[in-house]
Image 1 (cartoon, rainbow, N blue to C red):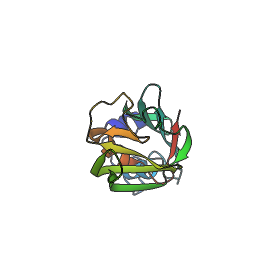
Image 2 (image 1 turned 90 degrees about the horizontal axis):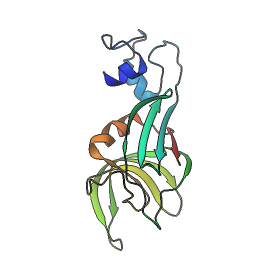
Image 3 (image 1 turned 120 degrees about the vertical axis):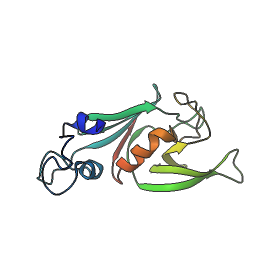
Length: 161
């Protein structure tokens, strides 16, 4: 209901444009839920490293925003414009040869590969969001990450600045 109020669809009608697709499905797949025409709308994830905030928008409207934890000194989160390359439901970070081991990490959005593969992902091992804590990935509290993961699609723009 919150997203419908933000987007301006009819919260009493699950299919505001009567095209046979629910408003929920259309927002998740990137289509305009207020038009029966097949019109794609911009889905963007923005990460503000200075403020340690992630926000995601649909057609310029902020669906949610919250504190994150980006990379620490020497392991900074890359800046730039990216796109979601892959969605990985569960992944292990670290392991042998690393100083950390986080198995079973849920909701991983792969956005670039350089020296390492970088993800926006849930983090269950700390609650210090709003402060750099990671090895370059964007850590998100689980209670925020589930909706972001479900909403994001392969190809969703990611802006990190």
